[in-house]
Length: 46
Image (cartoon, rainbow, N blue to C red):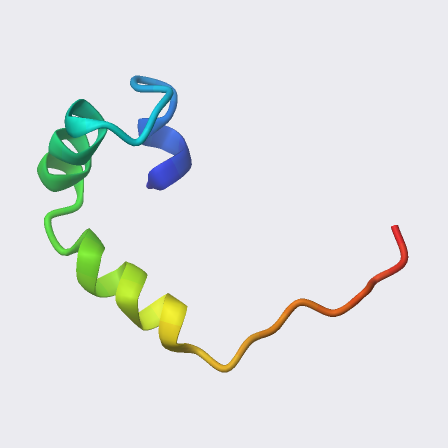
Protein backbone atom coordinates (compact mmCIF):
# COMPACT_ATOMS: atom_id res chain seq x y z
CA UNK A 1 0.00 0.00 0.00
CA UNK A 2 2.87 2.33 0.81
CA UNK A 3 4.11 2.33 -2.78
CA UNK A 4 0.62 2.83 -4.17
CA UNK A 5 0.04 5.84 -1.94
CA UNK A 6 3.33 7.24 -3.25
CA UNK A 7 1.60 7.53 -6.62
CA UNK A 8 -0.60 10.17 -4.99
CA UNK A 9 1.87 11.70 -2.54
CA UNK A 10 5.63 11.60 -3.03
CA UNK A 11 6.76 12.31 0.53
CA UNK A 12 5.94 10.87 3.94
CA UNK A 13 4.09 13.99 5.06
CA UNK A 14 0.72 14.64 6.71
CA UNK A 15 -1.13 14.05 3.44
CA UNK A 16 0.63 10.72 2.96
CA UNK A 17 -0.36 9.63 6.48
CA UNK A 18 -3.96 10.73 5.87
CA UNK A 19 -4.09 8.67 2.68
CA UNK A 20 -2.62 5.65 4.44
CA UNK A 21 -5.19 6.03 7.23
CA UNK A 22 -7.95 6.21 4.64
CA UNK A 23 -6.93 3.26 2.49
CA UNK A 24 -5.32 1.03 5.14
CA UNK A 25 -6.50 2.05 8.62
CA UNK A 26 -4.35 -0.56 10.43
CA UNK A 27 -1.14 0.30 8.53
CA UNK A 28 0.77 1.16 11.69
CA UNK A 29 0.13 -2.30 13.18
CA UNK A 30 1.26 -3.94 9.94
CA UNK A 31 4.38 -1.74 9.83
CA UNK A 32 5.24 -2.57 13.42
CA UNK A 33 4.80 -6.30 12.81
CA UNK A 34 7.02 -6.22 9.73
CA UNK A 35 9.65 -4.18 11.54
CA UNK A 36 9.72 -6.64 14.43
CA UNK A 37 10.57 -9.64 12.25
CA UNK A 38 14.06 -11.09 12.66
CA UNK A 39 15.18 -10.12 9.18
CA UNK A 40 18.52 -8.57 8.39
CA UNK A 41 20.25 -7.36 5.26
CA UNK A 42 22.94 -9.60 3.89
CA UNK A 43 25.39 -8.73 1.17
CA UNK A 44 23.89 -10.20 -1.99
CA UNK A 45 26.73 -8.93 -4.18
CA UNK A 46 24.92 -6.57 -6.47
